[in-house]
Amino acid sequence: MEKLNIGIIGLGAIGQKHCDALKEINRANIVAVADVDESVLTKTANQLNATPYADFKKLIDHPGLDAVIVAMPDHMHREACVSAAEAGKHILVEKPLATTLDDGKAIIAATEKNNVQLMVGFSLRFSLHYQKARDAVKEGKLGDLVSIFARRLNVITQSERINGRCGVLTFLGVHDFDAMRWIVGSEPVSIYSESSTSVPSPYPIENETFSIIRFENGVIGCAHIGWYLPAQHPAGRDFKLDITGNKGCLNLDQMRQGIEIYTQNGAKFPSVSTGLLDEDSTFVNCILDNKPMPATGKDGLIALKMVQAALESIKTHQPVKIESN
Ligand SMILES: NC(=O)c1ccc[n+]([C@@H]2O[C@H](COP(=O)([O-])OP(=O)(O)OC[C@H]3O[C@@H](n4cnc5c(N)ncnc54)[C@H](O)[C@@H]3O)[C@@H](O)[C@H]2O)c1
Image (cartoon, rainbow, N blue to C red; front, side, top):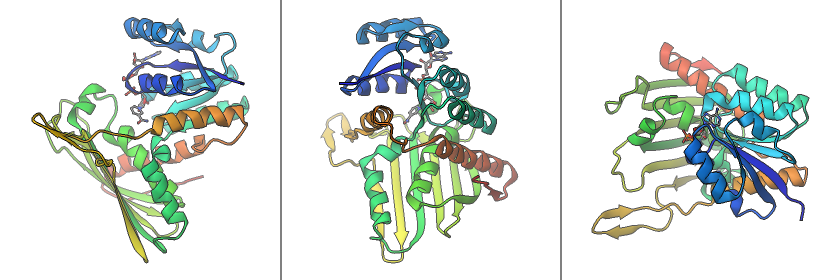
């Protein structure tokens, strides 16, 4: 069987999940891993029997490497992606594509120039819940679409974990902005956002935001994004999606996934999602079978434009136009 030789750059929270997912994929070989944290690098390389690199540029030169997964902090995506593209490696970059439009465009330009595939890790596109919601809309089950509401609330410890290196819209909101656009099937034309600080936070960034989005086809979107849930929250998340059409509505609750465990220590709402496994196997299959990626650099750039416009709106308290081309 033809296999894809993959290197993983960044072995933190999501990098480890990519390692776990790729181990399950028959058509993938993790041949190399990179991280500046020596202890996590050595441990992960030993577990995977992969070559460790402290310098990701050396990983990119690993003999026989076909592709990389870039799972470093958001603001570092450009350097790793451009270097990988220039070396002819296909790329799965974690969301958001980048933190500035310049960086996002530079990544896309490098992949186009070097003819390599680029996928952005919009994991909601691989969630069964969100796929079913999109199918219902596409099949016209709700009639003509009127509005879409997304909520993504995480625990306060999430912002503490990433040390305030970005705000909640960049880290979490980008997921829903992309998912809304993907489900609505239309481009965003403007966004109006307000933010608040629901609970005291050590970081001078918003931890709760409300955004109203107008889409080209007339649909109104509303996104409530935050990371202020108490650390003891039994599910650690409150993710919802409500879609309204003129012939019906759809309600999605990702906190409840059909299994709930109640003990003397409290309630647990385990996640049974296999989204990342599907995301990584799609990436592998698209490269080996030469198929187009389901979440492209352009998708990443538009979601980033939505985030940037929302951040500008938070400052000006005015709606901000979004140019999608
Ligand atoms: N799809 C999702 O659901 C999801 C979830 C979490 C994070 N993310 C995204 O994944 C990326 C990583 O986030 P995270 O939460 O795993 O962060 P993290 O801080 O847990 O991990 C980042 C890792 O990158 C390493 N690193 C830093 N500089 C490096 C360098 N120069 N070379 C190699 N490694 C380096 C760090 O040592 C760390 O191990 C971010 O872009 C984030 O937005 C996506």
